[in-house]
Image (cartoon, rainbow, N blue to C red; front, side):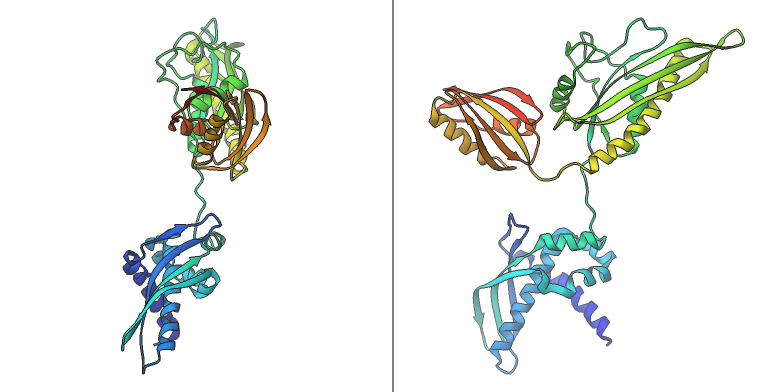
Length: 395
């Protein structure tokens, strides 16, 4: 049998053995340094009484099984079957490259077989990097969510219509509808605002900070603020057909930093014998053009977003009772995603800390609300991008 065919059958066997022995690995702990600790049952027949050779073969098999198990966590069996040759060349022909260390936990020998429980530390992050470099693994980015704040005024309307004011507005502006359609096609998620049951009572001229605050509460990654207006032009054709021009101006901001990341100012003209329909179609066309502009800029900005933990500033009031503040900090450190806490400033009854956190300020606030304390409670009175205001309330 050719060596290549033997090797392929052997590697197929490795994957099958990993699957069969997975139930014999009671512990597989992911470490913070990109490693994976896996326990496997390793075995080998003893030939001609050579215990040393059997032990070495069993441990080698155990290392192969552990690396195979870590590989299956990253690249499931169907994906490996589809591109098995490339997986072999990328991973399985350099098993030792991914083994950081190993330990024989216990062993047993009979006249015919040697068995051992082996703990293997596999460098899974290096494995992931090699799979990415080989094109076998793709980075799946979460689809960013967008919330629009677009005021719109058609030719037959005396004032702009907007959904965040004193009155509930359920109709989606034509310009917003067009922009939303374009951005959906570019893999953005659009947050609907027609489900409001109470008006928000904000002014027409919405500040960036207010839009970002609303966006955070609605789960948005990006807020788009702008205006759209349609008006008649002097062009006519015959007695009924008129020309309508619409202008759309929008800016986009990240909700985690309030940073401006996109801008568009577009116009479009449409001819119709109906003022309302002509203005609406012009607004839609201008919105579509603006949507194309925004899609390019937002896609680029989102791809460049920083990875890893961000810092959330927390201003904690009511810290004169030091023991309560200590308990609060201890609990904060146990929240998933919190990697470090830095004490910045201490005053008589107020302290400021910076938290390295893999999430948004809103998600950190949500996590804090799920914790209870015996001697005090918390009042989260302010939630802003990268900042929380919290008061410790004595019980």
